[in-house]
Image (cartoon, rainbow, N blue to C red):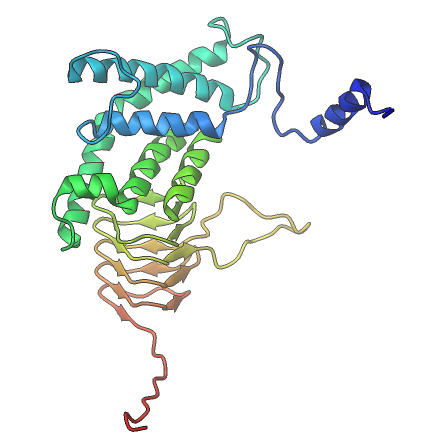
Amino acid sequence: MSTFDMNSLGQIIGELSQYDPYPIHDGNGFSAVTRRATVRLIERLECLLFPMQHAWSDAVEGSRRNARLELLGVVTWDLAHQIHRASPHSCDGGGTECPRLSEAFETSLGFVADLPAILQGLTLDLDAAFNGDPAARDRSEIISSYPGLYAIMVYRLAHRLWEYDVPLLPRLMTEIAHSATGIDIHPGARIGSSFFIDHGTGVVIGETTEVGKEVTLYQGVTLGALNFPRDEEGRIIRGQKRHPTIGDRVVVYSGATILGGNTVVGEGSVIGGNVWLTESVPAYSRVIAQPKIQLKSGTP
């Protein structure tokens, strides 16, 4: 008969707990933000922003306005509890007596008050997609089926939470969008209005990237770091600008890679496909790769 008993299982759990990044308590106590809860939060926020395209799965009210009001209340409380859970702290069960929950609720109220401004910005992104893609028949098609707009929507929501210094949750939101679309936008990046990502798969935008207004990126574009500065002990130095700055009205075509915190692409420039760029270029530049092309005769 096996000697493997509950004591052995308890020993395994004890050993696993040594490596837990977050403390987890029994009952209704503090626990880390979960991916599933964050997916649900994004879905509810999407319903609030674009109600004409998404079902009111969480609402019981009959009229659209009342259903939207009900869902806003659900989002406010849900977000407050997720913010409360996002940062490890001593909490005796997550009740209203916890001062961190009160702070989280104030942050949540501030964030939902920002939703009209976020939607105003997303409307400009939506217009940029419609005006930049002749295949788009109407804006509802873009809202419902363009991965670029979805990734930008999640980024703009996550970036606002990032500005509120909410830990973990903004990064988890953009990673969920990354999994769904193949577009990886760090919530710390700063991106101007009327931003358009066409096709989108493989786009990477790093944490300290700055993107101006009316910028268009195509699939496979990387706005990344050239290197990671380290201190005397070999540890990465955090908080420095590592990613490029892209000026207004720049177009970056598919497969281009632009690297480095000191790299600035001047306004109005066009960066061609498969370009590798690690130095600044002035405004209205045209940067293209020059592959060697060999043509064979058409005769056998």
